[in-house]
Image (tube, rainbow, N blue to C red; front, side, top):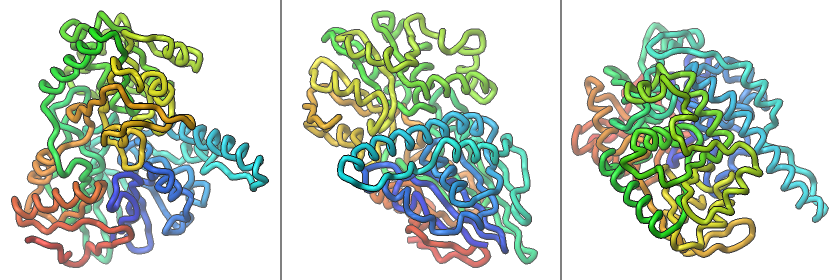
Length: 471
């Protein structure tokens, strides 16, 4: 019984881990690689395994860097079941269709350019038909319920508190009469942040795959984060500018709507017009409304008696492209929440084009920005940003608000591991080099526990003692 790390090993995106038990092969996640053009090009490469020989996929959550290559897996021969939480299945029904549409549009644009040069046409990474076929293979499960994946593999989902339906995955692997327990953290949520419940505690494991996105830093507290955002809103209002918030359609957008609804008077939001300018985020918000029982108490109380769309008197859901374009005529008083969260696609790029050069405007970064993305360039202090073939000067104020992150910080990651009995071996994944190494050092210093940073393609045999470093 082995686990082999093929994606999110030494990087954040592209989560994909192969579990082998006897003759059966199971994937934990199958996500898109995101970032620079070179990073994204990896998605077209052959899988490092035969998709037709994969027996099942167990999906931790719906974010595209965890689910986004599932239609490609199906396109290349996978025909097994895809196990996910019921809410994850609902979100994937909109996200994988949206992803397929984006790939089709990108291929169409690319092929127009290639035709002018006499080049051969390029197929989309996968099509809407591939996504639709993949969706027929989903099998919905609930939290805290054990289920059989294949012969010799049982699983249970725990609440990861990251986005709606996000899971910590517990796997019991049995081969030759021996059973070992593998725990995959998925993406762990930021504790004490509203909307979702805090991540569940796991008490036992023989090996843990632990995400490390923010393994080198802490987030500001929720109260400090609120004060910071309120200050930005007041400054921008007085300067007669706009606020742009590049936000992931699932998770971050709903958290922002909760914050605005619950702090409407305190934050002076009656002086603004708020726009959720993302058809995907709008549809995802409707899925959240259908799964209120999965939210924390404060969010259930806020949204049980009214629709999320009506939770603010000045909230507008802009569904059409024409409605989105009209926002670019607004010179002040607009808070625009739009995708993509890393500014590498979607409507936010048009709003940046019209507002980034204005010193009275502010951009609030509320999520992780992968290396090579425009969002990362803004966080790193870029003085200009290339958008639609044009260099746009960055005069707007850029703010990174870590307290709105959907990922646990270093202390929360360590606290989660601290609950597992007997300090099992740790494999660190889903992080950049600095974050991975910082978390590894903290594990060694605090627990003298066996810990290892996964390399791409590296495998670990659960049936044998794992010789990880302890010092």
